[in-house]
Image 1: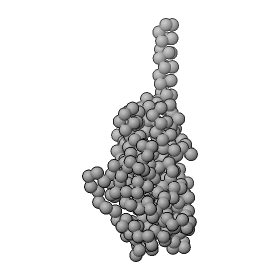
Image 2: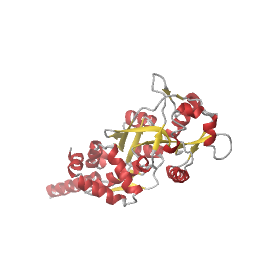
Image 3: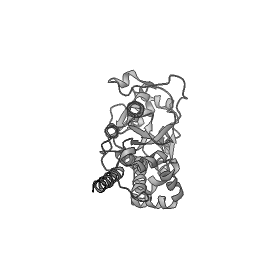
Image 4: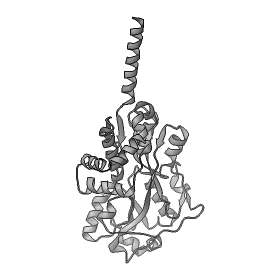
Length: 316
């Protein structure tokens, strides 16, 4: 009887451990389409061929909250699908290198540049052109004497970087940032294109915007030692920071709570093995958000068409 009770307890413990090891995975839903597309593909892999459970947490787009949630490891949020570096160097220093509570896969390359519509390429080609008051006046929509450029969403670290760059280039006396959501910006860009109106904006790759519109990238000064010296966490970040060169190519990661290594080790292993390609991500964005297809359907189709690759992520 004692042996039977011991065996029964062992089975119960193993069952409890198995249940814990398959805990539901919560994926953040940041406010740009690349992150949303990646999140949908990861969820479809977990819910599909992995036979586990994942949920994309809509509205979870405040990046400091996402990183803090992954750091806690309590399952409130487990995955950031598109961590841009070095935009979030402070989070990397604190959680990846410091607390060692967040892990990442091998990143894919991304770019961050300044653009105008191609129909303005005969007037604007470089940062130097933006120093012309007549050029800046073309972008002044509210009559306050300052041209406007889209610097990004209020929650993005890159939004601070572009304000630092404009100050460092000596442009802040002629230009002011528009800090609005990506969706609001894109609606305004569509209207501007329809009327051939001026627009100046930061954007990145991969993104379907480069397929939708003919964009003209502005030249910036080359990088040199000391050209990028920023402290985004300082109270007076704009005053103490300096950045007067082109942004180096980013590396973009899937970041996940290391607590998944105990709570759902199979998913943690898959996330560590994932390796994305920018062209594939752009294709997902095009299908999910521009062609307005069901994101889950797009993700499942891609998984079925790339079974060997997905299996290598799961089993590798």
